[in-house]
Image 1 (cartoon, rainbow, N blue to C red):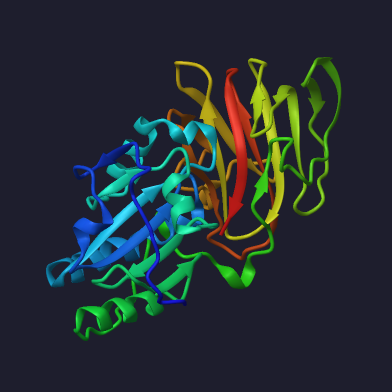
Image 2 (image 1 turned 90 degrees about the horizontal axis):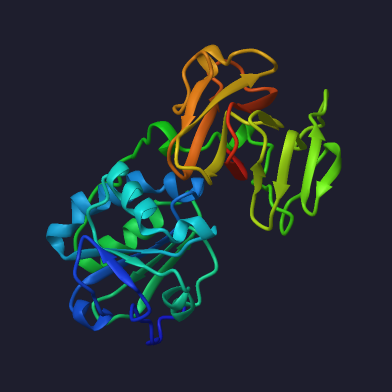
Length: 315
């Protein structure tokens, strides 16, 4: 990491949570951890237990954590969704809203999540994109604070649990036409960008399909019918999907795994009968395999129009 002085700035932030507006110059004399995140990113969600733990351990020693929420999907620009995520994740440190990527570009950032550790003069002393190796930024924080503390294992639960990397064979997959891949449904166009699809009876690994009438947009697939489904063939312990809705009322859904209710393999957002509700715009955990991890097909069935599906992620 180049430790030369660089001109980072929070000036592009349009709103702040848990704090009045902050400038980096206000934080001189403090060790600062800057966390770039977006609320639907499973990779960021799995870092949250560490961020909470570091605040608990090191804030009294002079560490200041500042989150920067830079949205990946357009609906994440809605600050109400960000506020809900902060409350659900018990995040109490300052968070800047960076909807126009001004702070992101100031840091030259490229990833969610990404951690920057700045010393008390504002120089970046560690850069940590992605997950794992959490001991690395923590050791740098300790060094800059002039303290020593045993690195204690942090164990996340629910969607915050660490991925089962050894058995993870399915990649993040986007469902809009700009970045989508692995689509396997056949169908016919009813209007421009609107198609009636037939859900495939069989899917190859890491392929997905739709059933019903859907609009395929840049970022997402949106259900137009009163009933519709989406299926993905995956190999991972966990299966998640990023969902939003274009209607005011919550949308009920059902999750099936290999054609049956998930039972003990249900994720945190559904019961063992597979029943769930799309009531917030966020990431939903559909499956957590608690027996032997193997290749499965997850199917998400909706009972009302208006659901938007953005991406599948796995862990």
